[in-house]
Length: 190
Image (cartoon, rainbow, N blue to C red; front, side):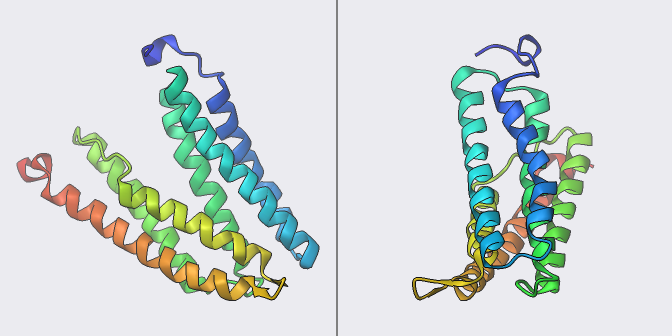
């Protein structure tokens, strides 16, 4: 694998992350007041963009083009896209505001914890539970965006069940990051 200093920041994985970031405003427009068609279109766009998340990480690792910029852009793109979708679903009455507020608060708290840990020389990498949290949020957002009933399946009801799972995983993974940090050697030294 090439070192990060030898890899150009203008590469396909980073470009895919930038496209995901640029999709957030498109999601806002699609979810402003969607009917049945725009709800379905917003869900399809969201799924396609989330697939690029898998693709950019795979390409970066396989081709050895992991960059510091990419390590910053990838989670930023995830957070922007997911929080934008959750926030836009609140005024549509598709998600409770309190759940979204707590989930976004968790994201901000973990981001702050990572900054503090980094200052102390501790790297807090994404845990398996954190990755599961992101997947569960994506999986719950798709039926919540679709919202309507298709082929006898109530997508909103399915999305609410999946939202409960995503909420539990979001809170649990946040607690896990804090517990792991406070148990670390570097924290006990300070």
